[in-house]
Image (cartoon, rainbow, N blue to C red; front, top):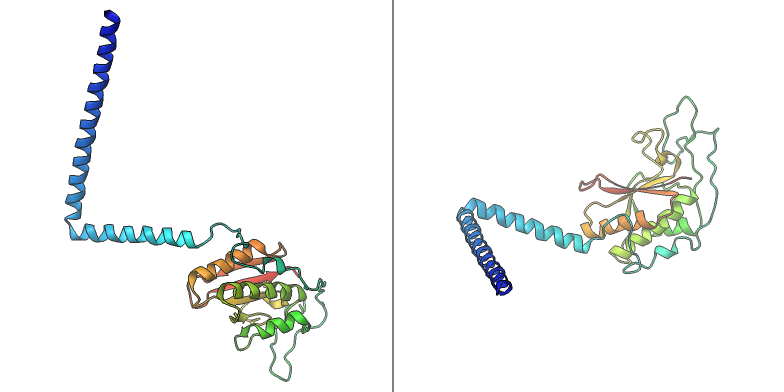
Length: 243
């Protein structure tokens, strides 16, 4: 009889505990609901709540559409990531050290001479890569498209990435290349034809973000990609090579 009594007592205690927990939960829910109702009654509070909900929805939608991290799964919506090494000449560029870059009769650009007589001249490139670049880009007035072979190879690939996101007829705009000596310091790759700036201004946010992520995740380590002047009229991709 004592065993049965203990079992019944335990069952009774469990039932009482459950009832107490349910009662506390109901009271807490009623208190919380009452507090929320009091807050919502205020127009200012309601406005801030709606703004917060809208912001959360926007962030979730944006994260869903945009890839995260620096790597990008190009197998889903881009077919050019494997094209980088196709038909790009593997040339070694050696910068001469004696001559200086001088202004020509057609109004070319002239560098500021340094104490070391640094040469900023880059031989004008020809060939399939150069032709492709000139046919598939716009250049801001004054831009000098004298680039090293390695940078031209990377730029061809970058143009194809732009086309994969904005359509086959899209042509990106080059806003700076082997020019602007008075703007860039003496260590800038622009001075040696090893860097270009590609405009992102006025382009839709998500596609241009994908372009940056694709280039960051797929270009070889000999290249660097920076997203500069974000959300301004000078927003651009800075693409540079080591040679």
